[in-house]
Image (cartoon, rainbow, N blue to C red; front, side, top):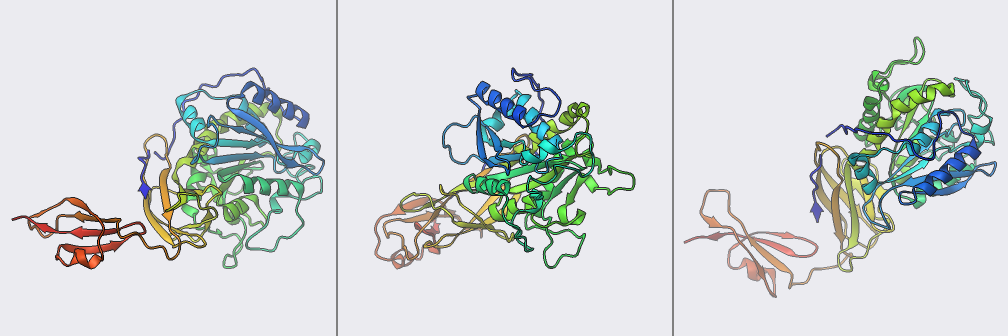
Length: 461
């Protein structure tokens, strides 16, 4: 069964009144101990909205700390999970501080309240805390701290689906992969420095792609839209101006990763291919580790763009796959949107999500031991805030046949101008479908998993 929600505009206008909270984070760079203390204070002062947890350890045994912010209570189904990650390169420091201030300057308005009531937001300020501890403030190009403590670039160390990339698994990579195994993220952003552009998959080169050409994913339209949402909301990114004289110009402030420069083992490609999570890379500062007096400007530039970006976790579909007879969830079902060659899977609770632009689609579903299913659905345009179209999909075991007592007949009017009535009636037990067809009133018969639907034409006399 399909339920279409009335969605709502390609741009979310967020009017925000930022308030300073008791945790009082100043605009400077915060080392690991200070960051950890701030996260403790924040979660303690916002027990009804926030929780802190660790996804694992760095090489030097520092916790990779995450704060989840949401007003959703308990295990409510259908709620999308979003993650924001900073500091995968330890010397790219602005994103780390932006995410801390994103928590600190908690906005209070109806839009944000809606977002918190309907979204789980997970913030990992520093994926590479070891690198940050040795990085040097004021260095705008490469320097100490970019790799982890094992001297490995974490954004080149994820499994790659187009190129061999076995380098051994770093503890930070292991932690993030486990995190993604446990939480069904639908949308993600990784904050970097060194350029001003929103970068989207693929970054790795497929076999049929030449160097410096776009490496196009099956959901390229969605990725471009996500990148444009951020770039347009940023006061300067959308202009596409280069950071250096004679540098690269990015049209609309966005770029396909491989078209800019190809790399192997990137995190955003892994998110998408392994987990169906749509992640883009946000390069938010021309200088990798700028002076701290520039942080207030970076915060102003990115605060609304981040909020707008997160809200688009609600444009597309959500749903649950259940057994049609027992109503129990079906986990690990394979799903694919027709025409998009990318499979994603249902969770242990049978849930699924997919970001899509407005339009008409067909969802194809398969699961071991069940008959294949397909569902047509629509993602509608929205005027104010997006809302996921909700689907409930019932699947039936291979070989299952519906009971003969669940036969429904529906009368309809013809299209040739004749006088007919349109009514519906439900038949009780019948021996065969031929009994219904023998009265010459059945014009068409359609087989469904749970019932036979017979269209009857009845002339009025």
